[in-house]
Amino acid sequence: MVNINVPIIVATLAPIINCIQLVPQLYKTYITKSVKDLSLYSLLLILTTNLLWLLHGYFIFDLSLIIGGIITAFVNMGLLVLYLLYRKKGRGKE
Image (tube, rainbow, N blue to C red):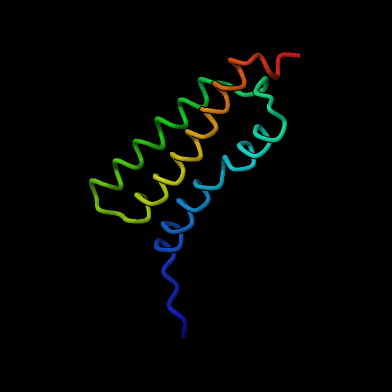
């Protein structure tokens, strides 16, 4: 009989899904060079939430939260950099 531990599966899937949630937006922003539909406040809130989860993972010594938090932070910071870069250059303001 297979022993399925649902809490461990959920605890593994959550950081993985969290890591990939912004990748499509990052890709679209990079390809189109348009940030007109992005909200800076949403990006900052997502980054803040991500950093808090990362700290939580650090405090409870949860490697999946730490690794997931680091990867998600890089993706989110990449999107934030693209936002600031393309907004500053005036791109996407049709």
